[in-house]
Image (cartoon, rainbow, N blue to C red; front, side, top):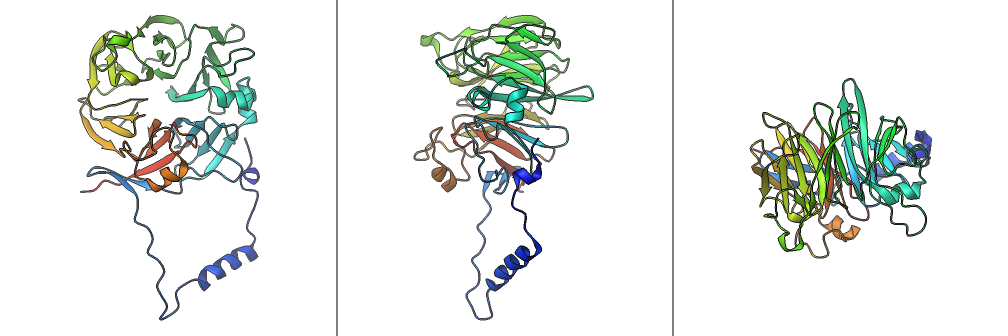
Length: 379
């Protein structure tokens, strides 16, 4: 963990403070002078009970640090927000919900997971926070590395404590043991944990398989295969996937269910906990990426430029920040275009919701774009 001195090396003295406040006072309008410019109107998305206001100060990093492509964002039980992106500095940033940067993890975290910071950035993907009894854990999903020489790293799911210490790893492990298990994933993308502790993993950039384990990572079953090229789309055969990117165990109905974001079939497939097909959500999603449940609703960051909220009856009740059609938008959007369109999303990749109903969204753009939207419902 880095110290506050590292994060904020320049500290204001009393003299600095007086100088700043004096300058500010000198800038106030004198009698008869032109009044100061009106502050800009708040940036809002949504409408009615689903109105949110952008917190423009949240998620900022100190000079010398930057985000890469936005991967995951989760909250712990104390409301701390963990943001990971494809960056070496930091690999992980932790904020409180008011935007204070609490910690950054880079070299120390990379050493814990057995990589360099460059290797962490190369393989980083989704996060999942889990409360298991009195304890909290984070599950990390790694993509396969892009390096063309040397060993192919990544292809792991690992479970850590809130300090980033690996407690169990499964997939492309160096050596099996009591806390490490080999498993044949080709490119896993997300993990979810059921109320009974069972674990589900989607191999969304690879084999298109969904694997089910018990709470001790004992393998129970696997389903899924690639959708045939001539069958791609929302009506593709159930249990075939075209980038099964995200998974969530929903407790919105009488029995828990596995919701799978079948991204490039433009649908969400719903299964029971034994992975038997039940139904499909289509028409209200374009490229669903991941899922998050809060207060009787399911939130879906959609890589095709918006966030959709479903109620407990699988009905879309809100679609937020639709950036489709913005010139020079989508995943390749530049920072200046994003800044000119603060009420739009371009490539939402992951999100979470805090106890107040505020949204935290990261996007698959080169600068991560982690943002907070306060829940500000309107009549």
